[in-house]
Image (tube, rainbow, N blue to C red; front, side):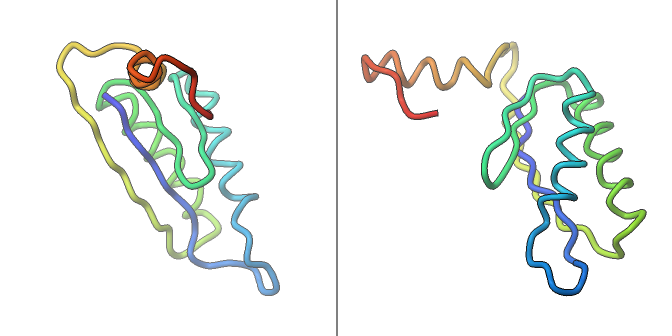
Length: 104
């Protein structure tokens, strides 16, 4: 399964519009999970089964809730039976059809 995740607090410290410090903490939790993932500029894709990925997402959510009263979360899931290595495989499939590499 692929999980596309966007998660950030909606409450910020006065004077800053950036949530990158909190997003970095979320990425650290994902990275330490050992699950395959790819960070993008607006979302992160995590590959794995329902329970392991949801455990990581919940851990990140609870971490943000320690210092913020509101957390915004969007999760999009691609559940394809028997599929493996989808993070790299989906891109490779498109590149094969194009006959060239794409900007990653």
